Length: 283
Image (cartoon, rainbow, N blue to C red; front, side, top):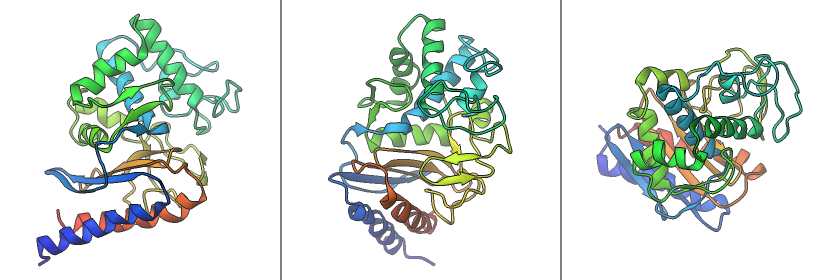
């Protein structure tokens, strides 16, 4: 039987691998259903988390859906596209443009434009700024007190590891939305669509939920080579990622300030594999 202290040392050693990322600042934390297992670095420090923002934006949209402010069927985006399409990057818009690259529901095209449109749509229906809705619907109820949206709903959330760990717990055991709504968000929507996972190349299928990316059969993948297909989360161009294995309940938040690049393709999968293996030995 694994000695708990030895196992914890192994996890701490795995987490310390973030120091080799080449970032000026980096911190990481791992949790299980019983709480935080281990952390490394200043987990209270706030920095931009880039596209991880989309997780909190999507959850804000889910709250609005349950409140009746908007619906998944609302037309939004290119002709034939809806709120549901944009949440799952299936509306057809390009990455940062309103150029229509595909018919809705036919291709997975990762789009900041789609998420910014979702925020404007909710803002118009609610009659309050999207940042206010996000704060009141998600950040404050979860206790994410250091987090703040400072611009685009696609990429401008500022947060800490500690705060994002609170969001991981919401993914693990939702309390802001009904579990059935969370299940919809965290399972594949518009199944079978192929597409390009930014930085990681063509993936067929390129699975996505209503906000969270779903690992599925993607390879290579930033969450590691041994990540179960149900693993969900998001990474950001600021050198950050969040993943949760819903089967084991193990979640990881890693934030850094080295912009995403080829280095991440080399480092992230092995780092996540090692962290996951060490954490699984403790739960």
